[in-house]
Length: 124
Image (tube, helix red, strand yellow):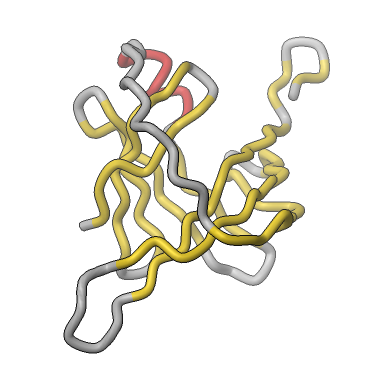
C-alpha cells in the first residue's frame, strides 16, 4: 500500500495447512484455513496490524503447483523483520531463489507460485 511514493503497508494472504502426527505414525494433512494479515511499516519495521483466520475446514487434496521464477530484487523487497502488536515476530530473508521465514524456533522455506503468492516448501 502506498501514499504517493511512500510505502506504508502491505496485505499478505494465503492458506494455513494443518497436519497431525499420530503417535508412532506418519504426518497427515487434516485441515486448512485461509488467512489475511495487514502489515504497517512503522519506524522502518513491519508490524502486523490485523490478523484474520477464516474458512476453517477439512483439507482439500490439490495438485502440486509449479514454482515461479522471481528475481532476487523482487524477493529482497519482501525481506524484513515483521513484528506483531503482541511482540511476536517473523524474519523474512532471501534464501537463494526462495524466501525463508523464521518465527520463533520454526523456519519455513517458501517457494513462489507467482510474484504475489508463496507456498510453504520446506519446514526446517
